[in-house]
Length: 200
Image 1 (cartoon, one colour):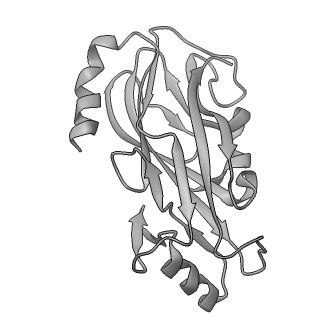
Image 2 (cartoon, rainbow, N blue to C red):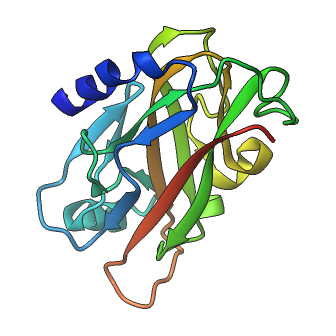
């Protein structure tokens, strides 16, 4: 929390500069991790944490299940990424949906690593507005959990008007199906994500 507050207090002086500061770039799903079966509620819905106990419960249930990460590496909070964003005091524009009109598109600009499943269809993303100090409210393009490959304009997360300062929470879920097969069990993988604020 202290780190999040530090981000909040540091950036108002840079309201008209283009700045993206996210607290984590790696999201880890490790279904061999030790620990008790644990759930965490997001938007009022409990989701299991990716660990061995959660994986065994998934096998016992025989139903498709979405898991929160084992760890958001470097994050202030255990299961989500926090991004503090400032937009220039002018419109971006150029997008079909994300960055349309006089807004800037905040997007996932890169995905790499070793996910156990196709991230475009099995990685789900949701964005929440945590705080806003200046400017008009952003338009969120993943207000509920949305497959990565279904985000608009090349993984657009939010359209943010010019002259704004906003902090966003980004949540990730990995979906497993009982019919999935893996080279080794229990499976694991790490996704490295980069973020950018762009006019399209």
